Image 1 (cartoon, rainbow over the protein chains, first blue to last red):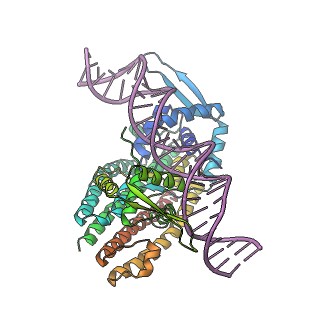
Image 2 (cartoon, helix red, strand yellow):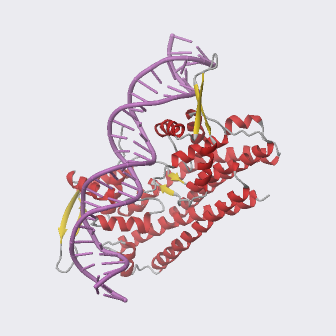
Image 3 (cartoon, rainbow over the protein chains, first blue to last red):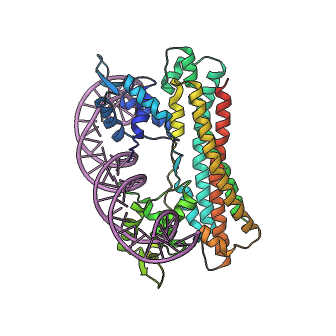
Length: 201
Length: 201
DNA sequence: TCAGACATGTAAGTCGTTACATGATTCA
DNA sequence: TGAATCATGTAACGACTTACATGTCTGA
């Protein structure tokens, strides 16, 4: 069995952006990737150690005066090679676990009103997320249009790069990733409206 | 920790449609639910046994002459109650693992051509699935419009119900579930076009 | 001072996947 | 006859989640 170890490559890929601590990785994934990827500490810290053991990352512990202890991991050439060869491997189709869809699908024994309520709750939930995503996308679009990525974005987006071109590229990729999430949510909301209409007649 | 046991409720919900074997459940999930839910034998068979142990399902083994052995599980009143109370509990937001998005997001160090190729492959992959879904949706829409669900659909859809109204309701729910999948895929394809255009300038 | 964020980590348990084992029946 | 499908099931492993433990620093 070709063990997949996707967490390894996800972390390796993040380290190829810039050196990070386990905490940084968790924060970055939660802030910007949660609509298509999730990781948790229970996976992150052991994986980082195993990357070090495999010489795909190196750790550097520092406790600057008056600062908290931080363990920052950097990717090695070996790690970078491994990551790049994984990118070229076949990509699995998206895997979704949508509990609302499951409930809805199984609801045909229940009253129509019950099913409609389920869908309405889903729509409300998705609408809230959509608002946040649109806000972030707006900030990024402005940065791209002005041709200048403000330093302030670095902390929000956790991006960095030496050259302006590289920073621009990262900004664009982040923006497009967000757009994917926005489109997915919009599709769900449109479906809610369709489903409610369809069920009410 | 409130252990979730979603597989339990998924199976319970399917059994509320009609009595089924583990094999039936796997086939049904693969055929119609895989865009938002997946189960495998390693989960299904032990869960069925545990449902029997909890008196939420009963098993009936039969080996009709000249037929294969089948173990069919039916939901009990207790099981039905458990399922219905789960439906009313809060619903988790969809969880997605989209490997393409992960690769794309992490690709800003790579050549633009590489990233474009990734997206193009994704588009091709999603387009293929879209074709299948649209075919199935067409069959279901025709059945709904004619007001009559052909017996032939029973085997394809694995649906059944005593009354015509109940069959109609199941048909509608199946149709709408498919529509959710179609909209999700369409959103991904539209995104691919947007991303390719955006990256090429 | 004290809540909340920063920061690292482990243990226990559940969930999910894959491979394997077994055997019957159908149909070309 | 032999491949494909039907059908049930388990073992082993890997992935993932949650709760917990520990301590530091910042800012109101």
